[in-house]
Image (cartoon, rainbow, N blue to C red; front, side, top):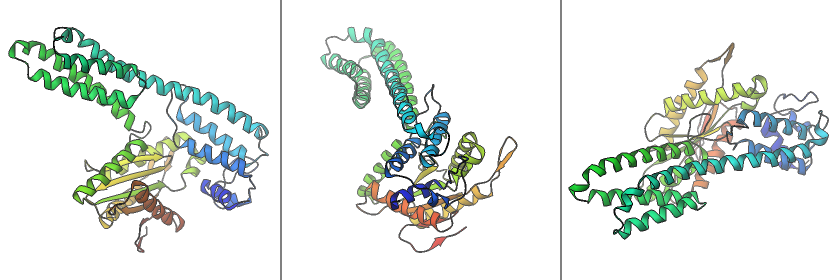
Length: 369
């Protein structure tokens, strides 16, 4: 069996035996798997980290189904494993249809907000037909609504709102009464847009920021560093043995642990500018502006101490868990991929040397539990 396949199986920290249940770490070496099945297993694992919470297909249920496919791929002797490729192809085709429908419906809701806004202003715009700039700007907004580009719609809606508010403030006192109504309308739309934008930037399960938002934020701080030289540190972390939590207690408990972990992280990284995000599965990232690596390490240790001492109660269960962390301080001319790779390498150094610790990238000193 090729080395990359072995490493992939070790990553799961599972032993898919004849009974289909997970065992201890290291037993994955006993499994013999073809590259084709390993590639499909990697696809399932990657897709599992980026699921959408669709009404007809809750993330928990989809995760259970994907985990079942993964077990059958690893152990062909399990019931139903002989037809796993057909079942996965059938499942994936059906799920992609539901996923595409969900995204399109979300986009349609966003367009409806803008269209209602433009329609509500229609009467006022008719009275200002001599102002060609307003008429042209509103027409561009309507064209953006009818297009199928969310980026174009977002840009045109902001452009029109800013332009229209500036224009209205310059009008004479005879328009003051209508200005009250217009501003109220604008504030209502702005609130809806902010809520829609917040929903698109936040992880539905944990209420941490999502991966897309995290990537945008990291790029922004890299740009700021190029201008001002501001210090920024990045912490990458994940929950130790999280796969075993899911296998031992079920995905409901796994979801509970993810939410509790985010809650504790936010208690420690509680400045307004601190940025806690869920990057996928049990992996998280924290951006700390104005922190060098050593200062970030102290905050990371505070978070680890808080998590390891906490007893999480869910029904009749008392759950404890730990996290491993890696830290990288942003360097001059460093790209987002480069600092994330350094932080991720430090994270895996923590995991490979006993877990429940933090490692600073480029520094030999390890902060052990």
